[in-house]
Each structure stands twice: as C-alpha cells, then as structure tokens.
Amino acid sequence: MSSKKVVTVAVLVVVLMWSTVMTVLGQVAAVAALLPSLGLLVQQIVQALTDGSRPLAGPGSTEAGTEEPPR
Image 1 (tube, rainbow, N blue to C red):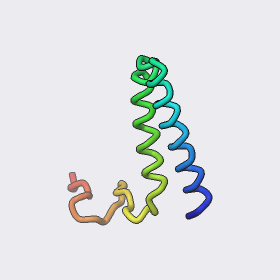
Image 2 (image 1 turned 90 degrees about the horizontal axis):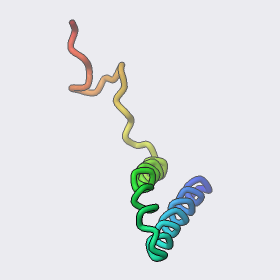
Image 3 (image 1 turned 180 degrees about the vertical axis):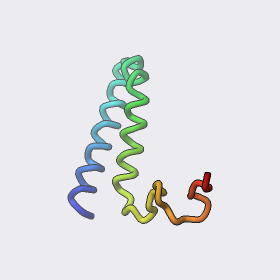
C-alpha cells in the first residue's frame, strides 16, 4: 500500500473516531452539522483510493453515448 493511501486511510479513521466521540459526549448537533462535510470527505477518500481505472468522460470523449449530437 502506498504512503498516500496510508495517510488517506489514517485521516478517514481519525475523522470518523472524532465524530463518534462527539456523539458519545452528547454533541449530536455538532456532528449533524458536519455530516455533509463528512460525506464529502468519505467520497473523496474513496475516489483517491481507487486506482483511477475508470476514466471520467469529458468533452472529447469517444465512449459510446457520451458525445453530444451535432447541432
């Protein structure tokens, strides 16, 4: 596992542990306010951990069905 992946997993673990501790301490409102940010963090970490084997379809993509029809 590369060092980038190790750091990414460590950050995810720390953030999720912090959220758990805040919930146990009764700070549910703080955790609820941060849920959208935590969801985005998890999404970005999962994307960073993937090897990029699925390329994103962009404006000049040659994949079937992704090109805009001529105008």
